[in-house]
Length: 265
Image 1 (spheres, rainbow, N blue to C red):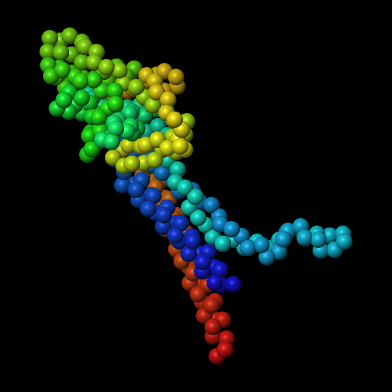
Image 2 (image 1 turned 90 degrees about the horizontal axis):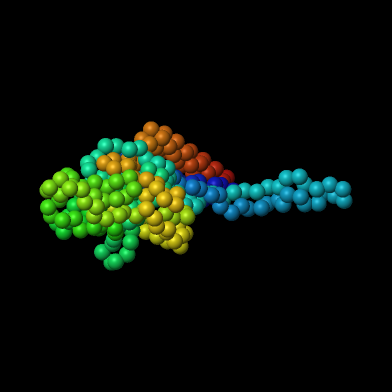
């Protein structure tokens, strides 16, 4: 009946509305350092089995097909795209991970968060912090002496944090480590360019850059967002058209119900 079509089309519009929200967020973060775009995955809902396939129709024959009416669509999940972002030139405190791994930063509550953004700055205490609105402290940050100019500090490809003091002498201040997850797609997004561990992501393994399958550091560079503007705009147009088709299905079902309602006239 047309009433089923009304509800089915409504589920399509709800699911597609969620996809538009996700695409809008991807596009909005096209210039966000270390941002990983998301895609929406769908799944079909339950089916009305009006005629069972394989039902015996005689002593020698069986129905090869059945009648199954679907009841719509549901957003099953959103999936992060952890492919490698492009490199852009940054400053001496910037660092980009080439390959797998995450930088580790400390949260105000004492927990640890993970990020692909490597736009670090030096705070008033001589520590390296993430250059976002929260200023999360790098978990492995050393305390860099005041006599070392900020423009003389660098993070090496192996994660070694070093710099030149006022006398031109090279000093090694600390060693940065990366974290790796069995399922990075299971991380929860906290905003401010950071992720948090969940049961789905698995327990992180830590190591120096370039060891045990972890990526290396590209000094003085940043990883761009994985949002591809053209792809997202094409998906937005497609989603808009399918949304319109679902709304047309609702109008058609409404017209059919109107015809039924007018039969008594």
